[in-house]
Length: 183
Image (tube, rainbow, N blue to C red; front, top):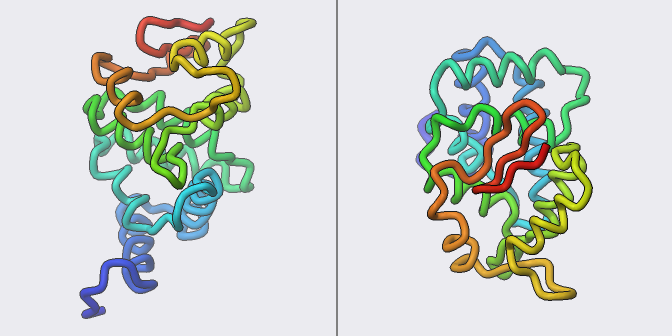
């Protein structure tokens, strides 16, 4: 495997082998994780294994292990991206604010490099993270969306999120975004 190319099939297979060996997780599970992640990023360019891999080095080893065990336990392909995202959010205190913000932006980035607030809110709603009436409207107001708009520029997104110690955390039934708590 002497290839030095970073985006070829070989490196993707090496990545799968490494994860499979390291965490005793079948490659089928890793494929499922990758496919779900890629589906969720349909409005982005093709997601490489290398990009997906960036999620893992920045997470504590125990958290990674637990995450993969959780995904393996749901090997019937019932895992949707929202499930993975919810799990990821609940385990994210080990990430720095900047790393998390960049990851979040990359997941919901439009082709013209804006943050898709509407898609982000729909993912949260699909995962039933909004359990009080009107929470989605509060989010829209928070992002200062004008009528008919559904995206904001990266600079605005960064400004809105950089002052948070933890931009988004999931605690049981509560969804916390900055100072907002939705129960």
